[in-house]
Structure formats: structure tokens, C-alpha cells
Image 1 (cartoon, rainbow, N blue to C red):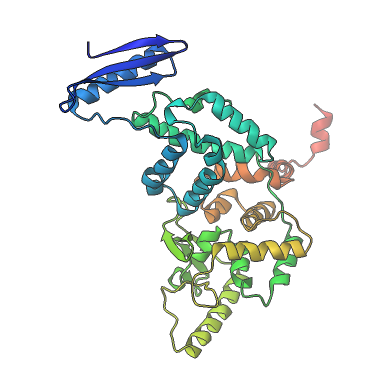
Image 2: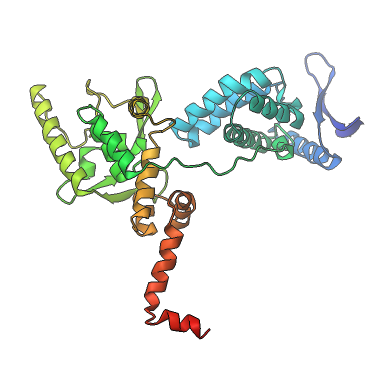
Length: 383
């Protein structure tokens, strides 16, 4: 028999004969421990025997869990995820997973290791939402290990994941927004932050705008790409996250006027430097002529809002403010959804209905008005 199973406590050991070694003359065997059911062990045995028959068998190495995660991130995930996501995953693996899983072989990683990791991180001060993000990363990475035959099953499926509630969006009122923008007047970053507030564009979409994406005569812009910092000093652009993210956004009159004045200023600055403003140049550049660092734009906004007494505001909250203020003003949700580049109107309403109080009440009153009942008191009296 070329391969068989042997029961060992709560696990199964696969033993496969690999034939005689030509140099030593000794018989070689492949041993593999499977933490799971007999059916799972049999499936793994079948897969191994099949790989031997078709010549695809590769002698497994004793990868640690962290070594596998690093290889997965570099060789697989990097191909399909965005640069900002890559940096986030890399940070999680380096600062969190390395300490917890560096000494555990991938094949010996068990649900209780993961469960203890979640408990330790929550006790150490990480939020439920952050640990839930770690959970999703692990699930995706280990699912890939299963597909590659490195694991029999995805052990994350047996782990109780922390369940965060819906994140509470910070509501920036129109008065707050005016106060923040007024305090930024004269700043080099006033125009890009004003643009973010008045269009709802994401940070990368703001930084990825080129002059050819602006039509100031028609007062609109096209979202065709987003700019990311891949590594220190290295930038790349990518197409929008989805087909709906590639969109036209009409500019409010004040923003169209501001951008027109800004362009005139940039043209004059280019002349002083002996250059011309090219249509493929980025609209928003740092003083040294290089792309603005995404982190710089965020830090300018955070420092400004903290100085004004606002705590925990993020640059992305400008996008939330744009959406919630438009909804409260009675703008049709489909229009708001299109401006934000959301996949569906339902998603827009699901996210922002909680931060737009009074929408239900307004809807009820409008419905009542549509019926145009002349004598509602009489109607109620005869009921």
C-alpha cells in the first residue's frame, strides 16, 4: 500500500511511501499530521497520492505561520490588493502576527492559538473592529493555503470572531465645516481639502486628479484614477475601485470659481519656474513639485481640527460630511450615491441614514402632502 492513515489521539497521521532513495538505498516516507476528521484526512491523502501520480508532488517545508503569511502577502496578495491595503496587511503581520505566531509551524496552527490571539489583543487595548480586520486577513490568507494543499482546512472557520457593531459615523455640521475651512484659508492645502469637502472624493482620488480631469467651463471633474504612496518616495496610480467609482462629478459654483483662481495661480508659478502647466500634471502638488504625500494631507486636516477643538476627526470624514449634508438637504439618494461612486443606492442609504436624522419624518410629511386631502379632520372624525 502506497499510503495509509494512522489514528493518533484526536488527529490522524498520513504516511506515504515515496520509494527507495537512489543514493542511500533507503526507503523514503512522507509523514503528515492532520488535525481534523477522518474524512478530511482521507481527502488530504487522496490529494497527496494524486500529486505523486501526476508528478506535481513537492516535498513540504516546515513553514512557520508567519513565514507563510509573509510569502502569501508578497507572492499572492500583492497582485490583487491595492497599495494602501498592502501596507496595512504588512503592518499587521509585522507588528502583530510576528510576535504571536513566529514559533508555530503553519501545519500546527490551531483554532485555540487564534482564539487566544484575539483575547490577548482585545485585552491589550485593540478595538473589536481592528481585531475583526485581523480575522478577515487570516481567513483570506489561510484559505489560500488550503487551495495550495498546505492545509487540509481553514482553521479560522472554527474560531469565534469578534463581531463589531456598525461604526458610528462622525457628523460634521455645515457650521463645523465652514469653521474648519475658514481656518485653512491661506494654507497650501486649503484648496485640496475644500475640494474634498465639496465633492466627497476619496483622498486618493483627490490627489490623483490631473488638469485634464477638470472641465472648469462645464464645472465638472472626472474621476479616472487615484494616487497612492507605494513606498517612501514612490507613488503609483490605479484605476478607481469599481466601475461606479469612475464617474463625473458636478462642481458647486464656489468650488469651480476657486479652482479657476487656483489654476491661474499655478500657471503663474510655473512661468516663474520656466515651465508650463501640462494637462497631465497633477492638480494638487507639494511645494517641491512632487505629489502631495497622502499622510501629509491627513495630518494637516487632523492638526487643524484638533486646534479648533474637534477630536477624532479623520480626513475621510469630509466624505461622510458631504454625503450626510446633501441627504439632509433633500438631495435624492441616487444623486448622492453617484457622486460618491457607491456600487448601489441601497449601500448609500444603509451607511448614511443613521447620520441624517429627520429623513424618515420628512418622508412621512411629504407623503401626506402628496395626497392633498382637503379635510383631514373630517376624515379622522368619520373613521
